[in-house]
Length: 119
Length: 111
Image (cartoon, rainbow over all chains, first blue to last red; front, side, top):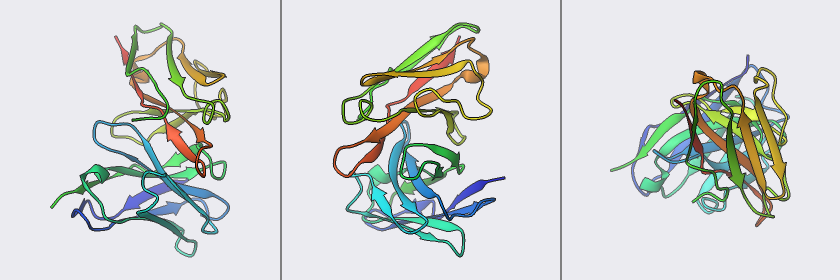
């Protein structure tokens, strides 16, 4: 049974860095692309970007200058770092598996973790 | 705001057919396939339709998808109370370096 679980601080101060990790179980992180998607309160879903098992990345233009994604195959985890956060980055952050490799097909999702940006 | 436009809401009584539209442009829907996601509040979104009209294993056949030009649609036939959720279309946009875009989302209410 494939499971994804997000972890990280639920509260981040403005201008600081948001860091989240997604731990994958039940499947090897190899041979797939892995994605972060977020949902601000009361708003829709927003694709943040993806990282492949070999470290290939692609980011949403809206956050490209502030975001870094990485993968740790030994730990079967992948991570998100978002720098210089503002209140607009407050959202539920989901990690998901990209089934088609750099696509919009997300077939496995974590339950999501709420991150609030506030002083 | 979202690159893909959906109606904010749709509703129907049990057993009715509900259709949700998703409007885009030549750089996204016009050039790529469309997926649909079902999202119940407090849960993880679920892939409902992929590649315009393909249902993943376990998705009831009363859910169907279609695409024409720069628009796509999701139809729910035989509406059931458990279908009350938010629905999002998604596709790839070929502008810039290419990125995934979601629709604005449609809340379906079962009356």
